[in-house]
Amino acid sequence: MEKAKEFMDLIVWQKGHALVLFVYTITKKLPSEEKFGLSSQIQKASVSITSNIAEGFGRKGEKEKIQFYYMAHGSLTEVMNLSFVLRDTKLITEEEYQQLEDLLINTNRLLLGLIKSIINSKEI
Image (cartoon, rainbow, N blue to C red; front, top):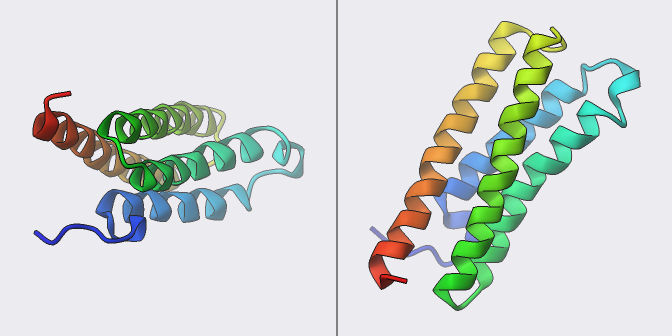
């Protein structure tokens, strides 16, 4: 497997970016009173996932990389929580929730795999 040269080469970043784009798609449909509530919060949290992956990629030390990847994981968990709120308040359809959940699960799996690979490679 070829080593990533840029953060955009990371599959986890690519999946996370697809998640961000989907979040923006579904939040455009939310009621205007949610613009500064759930919409803003889930958008910021989703962007934080890919931003922290990018920042972690740019760090030289493994401990720093992992720290940013864990922050990305925290943001991903926040998006997961907010997705339940959107589903349970019926602000998104069940189909939209399923798409969101799939993106979250895949991104989570890849992110945890990335963290584990760094930990195992260096035995930090």
